[in-house]
Length: 236
Ligand code: MN
Image (cartoon, rainbow, N blue to C red):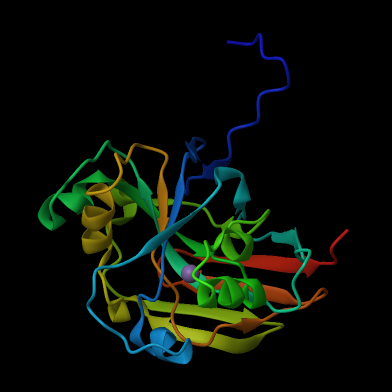
């Protein structure tokens, strides 16, 4: 169909390692407080209460290629703009009300992503019981690296997850410290939504979150999933 009254928005596409094909992004789901040490630093006791979710628009995703420095802009209306490095799972098959045992079968692949956050707004909204969109779902808030397909690389069961700012360690943990596993997250999410190919899930960040300012450069990676480099530019 091409008879739209305004230009149709482009499809956000993530590159796939070892392939010339791309992964089209439909929805972006994110899990909150999924590493115990991060839950504590945010002022909560870690629990095995069911995971909770929020979402970002697909066009918040900024594809970041290996070996390149991708630029994102500091967001408006914030003075506390923070990074969260996360394991991202990309859904490759339709899934509705799947069990934990079935959940891994629907995953196409994995990537490293950043859940960028206006922390000042997120906390203010949280404390008032309001939705988190202004703090979480803003433009350019989801840089994401290339996808490593399960077919070629399998499911990452363990491995370091880290983020540096200007070469200094800020976050360093291991994905074995996830409170809810990827399979548990996808199973739980699929009780609420009909997941389809193109959906991606940010699975939560480990401890060490903190602010960045214009001019700083973030590098973030997960063992086996490469790393991405993101430069913060001024809000223009
Ligand atoms: Mn997060």
